[in-house]
Image (cartoon, rainbow, N blue to C red; front, side, top):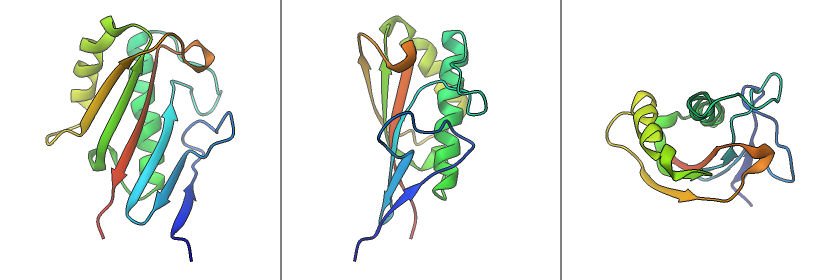
Length: 128
């Protein structure tokens, strides 16, 4: 018997490919990559600062649908098309998280879906 379930919410962008917004296995939730799509219009928000905030909002919506929140994130992966934006990510992340912060990686990439400037995925560990 599998303890795997799919997490979905209309408060985050619908999947634009062959993936789920998140998959829960036991007390661990794997959140798919989120770009800065407005979940209502499915349009990319404009501006790097706005994109970073929108990605955190999208991750928060999926985390909430799974029964958690951003503070439950154990591992956060950040993908940026320009690593010069990394200090801005740190500044905005401090507005959405509190200590202890999650483990994190930041990777520079050539391109992201829909020409987004930032994408993030995460792993959440929920309590019993």
